[in-house]
Length: 303
Ligand SMILES: C[S@@+](CC[C@H](N)C(=O)[O-])C[C@H]1O[C@@H](n2cnc3c(N)ncnc32)[C@H](O)[C@@H]1O
Image 1 (cartoon, rainbow, N blue to C red):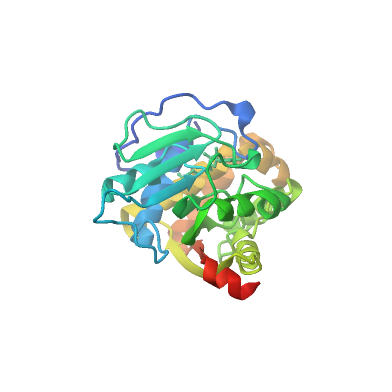
Image 2 (image 1 turned 135 degrees about the vertical axis):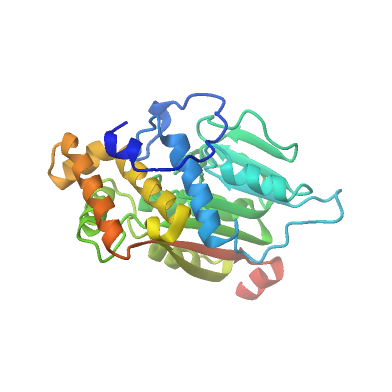
């Protein structure tokens, strides 16, 4: 790991407990090479997003249930190390959580109301229709092409969601338009890289249109949250900077190529970003897109 990445933080924080199995790089189609920092990137995403959003989900779904014989069911699609899944399961002990991911980087221990299994949504989810009260998917920006989102991912999510249940996406766009010259350069290159791979750099806009045009969905919402970057915003502002830098570092080879620089010069870009963060008010645009699956009555009205 490079100098700028290893020295930019002045304080320690708790690392996640280690995961069960090393990820199989062959199975990842993401622009991200799964490297040594993936656990930390995912951990930082969780703590930074939870801090600045103040909650783990925003859909108006009731998940707690006094009647433990009928626990609510929640799916965390693309759960990776299960940070969100385990956190949620600890907060809601009478709700059942299932985390799925194509390769097993699941935590070694978890509360009894969580299970994890290997599944690839592109092969179809191995769940019955109408199974879940909430389906959560976070940071899948780099995982699916436009065609995969339209033809498989959304269709599978809607299929396994219960009528009246909610689906929620938590994302940030590849391109972070902002004041900073360096941040704009990185954002522009990420956008180019994503487009070249058939991915959707402006996922927020795209998901809204996709959900609004889906005949089985209603109550589509889009909520933005600008995460302030840098030391002047305290520990979490600084963690957000580290989170972004590690994420870009994980794609430094293709990103350097797109920027037209040698990979060994990529650290200079990150250093320039840190300097920029210290003198300008920069932020990281994150958002949630969420929608409700229509009830049978609502579907009958539609037909
Ligand atoms: C950036 S990570 C986000 C992980 C987690 N949602 C979080 O917020 O901590 C994206 C995850 O989606 C998973 N993923 C990629 N392609 C997938 C697929 N076809 N089906 C299910 N999950 C997939 C990846 O393996 C990875 O764990």
